[in-house]
Image 1: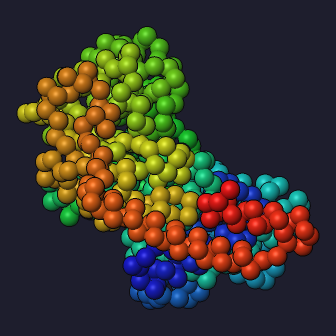
Image 2: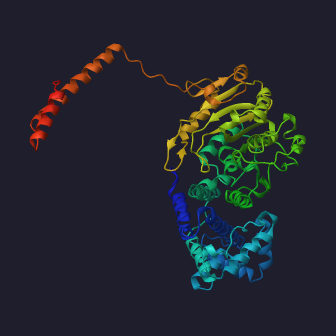
Image 3: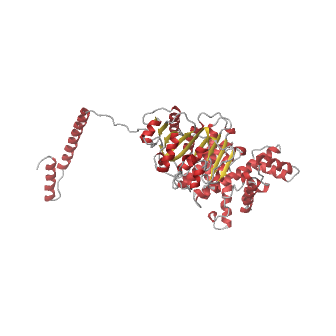
Length: 535
């Protein structure tokens, strides 16, 4: 459980996590996350609509049962048309009274609930607007994993809904609910291990990268941030926390995996991001460029792409403006530089980019070496940060954050070796806030710090054949403390005295012993003579 959070938030976190217990025994975290997160999102939409309806009827309440009754009466009365129109204008979706989460829980409690009701509620929301299109497609209500029979499937979903009904989800502020949702995603990532890499960047890494790219632009209105491998959107959403104009931030993100893309859409809404400020796309980032319509370049680019993934690397990409100026393509078996160049292409001239990649990009040769040299020749690589090993859910290898900028006056590179700055956790190593502050301080000061940071001139980098391997620039070797010969002699004398005392005590104990036979006794006496130095 996260530290330094209020009791109200902590109880929300705990209750949400407890509701997962019902599904935990039936399937792994990578599967049951879709059910729980989908139902949390549906309850949020339903509750928010009911509270709004009560307010529109000038009978605002924080009691969902009362709001449900008010809504039903108005829906069945003369106020029907006006109320429905207002709801659609406000939310772009509409849920009939008989299909709200509150009403379906009533049916659960009375034993009349059917999965078909919930499936219809999902469908109605999805067809109400393109904003919600296919939002619940991963929630398979008729999966055998929920139960072998329709009755057991019905019971499992009913139990989850009853547990969630105890929570006043829409009554929490957007940030609180969004952070609770983010907590759930993080817990699922922890439980599902390697499978989590596709949808989640650990919050400490997200914090570090976001503060780097937003540095100096905290007060900028209309700040734009782009993540071409956005996963659940956790990396993008950190911009809200560090911008002083958070309501004006625009988020642009692309994700290949449709399930994860839907997760990001829900995450945006639950964090209170207005629909007009979220621009999300479900497609293959490398296969086809996006976005291609204005805006195409952004104040910040954040990326945590799949490491050393395969891609087509077809020759036609040499004509692609993202890659054409470099003359070569990233290898088929290692798309790392393809992701980097895509992100860099979409960076504003005044923007900052931060991308997490494996260390191999810093020193591998051939095509990757040529791309790296081109980037260094143009001064694009600003900073290289070595992170600790085992801080991601999908890999235990150490990784590096590469910071890039355009139109820099200098071609020097700041190297920060933070590989030993972590707190050991149960499953993963953890970057604490203190570690993050130390890295950010070094990034802001951009000066040499013994065994931690080094500003390498372009000439120094050229001398190293454009190899950016961090140990070439940051010497973390610590010489052992020099000990004088006099101290060594003193220690040896003390050790000899101690050994003599121990030997005398041991001999004393041996001399008190007697062998059980004549031969054994003679052998024991011979052993004692040997210890005393005799023959």
